[in-house]
Image (tube, rainbow, N blue to C red; front, side):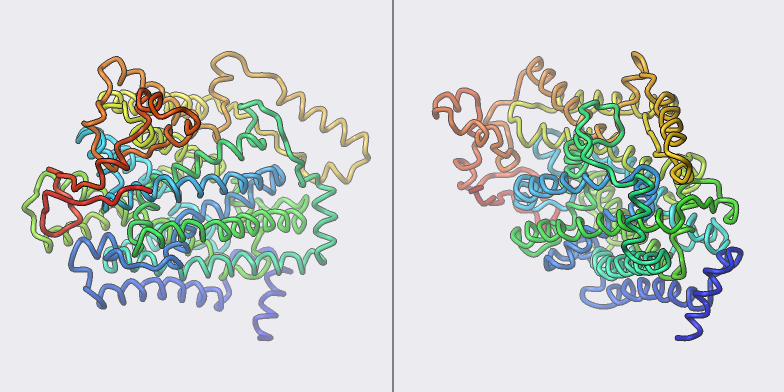
Length: 606
């Protein structure tokens, strides 16, 4: 214990020491990687030994709700969030915290709309839904979009913690990237979804522990809670509720609370990585329950990240650490600062966050490629071949992701923002596609394809436009050195800062400076609008052509005050309650059953 104490002292007193891990830190870090590998090995050798695709990709549909919910958090609370959120709070104040409001609807809607529809169809890839509702072409487009989104995001996830490790220990950056990528690829390839979910559970625990440790030590070094609060207040980091309706304002209550809902929907409603978790639950009830259990834990994770940002601000107010660390990036400077003495635990925390996200992505990428791109072309493939191929796929995505990490390295922007931008740009159109299919029985496949194309085109136009013009109206709060000067001086600085940012962008530039939190909503609506227009032009779908069970009677529920005959006219009474109770003949090969029955009963929706 005393050695550990003296280690802490050395680290705190001598900044040059910050570059080197103590032995204890290396031990903690190694234990983390070893434990993750161990869980992977255990699942590779126990149970059904991952011999069938059903077990490798769907965990045999046997998971309870606790591991599923923890795993849902882990795959969303990636290293990006653990570093990005504190950095965001440190530079811009607590406004970001309001995204917690979006979590409420963002989890209720998937629990009661998306999960019931998808779970009852017994899918193993979310995109099978698109084929049942529209056509093969739509399914393949959806799949490719998802693969594209996830591979890019993965690169970011691998790169972030490696960058942190490099900043703190001087450990070779690409060595760290390779280590993360390979460990992860190995246990995903060996242990399948069960390993992924259980390592997620373990990693979520490590993550919370790491964040707590950093906060506790930080508060202690700043000189108690009251001291932290005083510095944060003086530094002007506690943001009031900002009700500015301007959509180009980066973070306001509206962008976070409303735009955030669409972001959550595209993550928790239709993203394969998350849906695969729901589908691996035992029953639909367990799936819905796991969705509810995510909520408090997500709020906790958000609160921890935000408090961490504030504590770091109080601790390092006005000191610039980037010179000591040899990193210029704002994020880089941040995570090395938030290591007052627990570098090992914190880095372990980061890496566990990253590993959980990446492993779930590899697994879902393998599932999607397998189910949507390969199985339809080789229907006769044996289980053993298919499972082997799934493993090879998980592996090759792992390597592809390392290449993406290199690209991230070349990008440069706040980590959190890049991540959310990607999700908005690509997740929004996919969400729009699912909404179009689920809520509008008239939409046909031509409309769906046109909508998706338009949505993606628009998304990339705005996204790339904003990256090129870089005119995002961020207004970093003044650094806390200004606070120490006399009052009128501060006001002058404030005024200068405001003048710079208040010159309104004009025309197209204004369009490009749309807050990245609105991307999801904006693209989602584009897809729905264009999809519906084209569907009506090319002849809307007839009620009897829609595969039963694929439409959620949203309009019927919203317009419940209308009399029955009017509803029938508007086609809001979906055939869900009526025809579904009869057995439906599906001339559709359901891939999650070993034999291929032509009739499958779908329980009617209540």
